[in-house]
Amino acid sequence: MSQLPYEIPAEMRDFAEKSVEQARKAFEGFIGAAQKAVGTVDTGAFSMPAGVKDVGAKAMSYAEANVKAAFDHAQKLVHAKDLQEVMQIQSDYLKSQMATLQEQAKDIGSTVQKAVTPKSS
Image (spheres, rainbow, N blue to C red):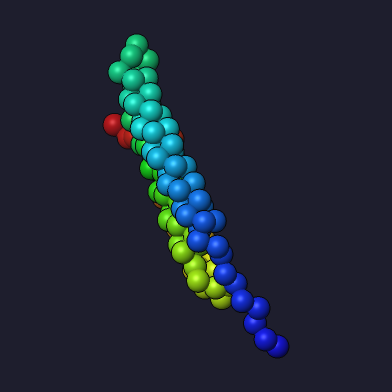
């Protein structure tokens, strides 16, 4: 069975690359504003318990890392030369993200457990 050629026109590739970069910059602006908002809440009249802060900080950090990984993945896909490379990039990304998400879930679970476990005096 012969393999069909897979060629993305240069204009489309350039457009996709610019779109990924614009989305990345928008996300970085959003995450910066979200982190600033979280910091502001904690310095106001209401102060969050340390355990809640830890869980929130980890969740925010993991969300940021996962979205950045998705942008990196999209960037690699834009530069793929053929369908075989696209499939390999996708496979590698899925394997990596599954391992990452499993580790993050374990870590968040541990952090939540510490936050809700009463400390002995």
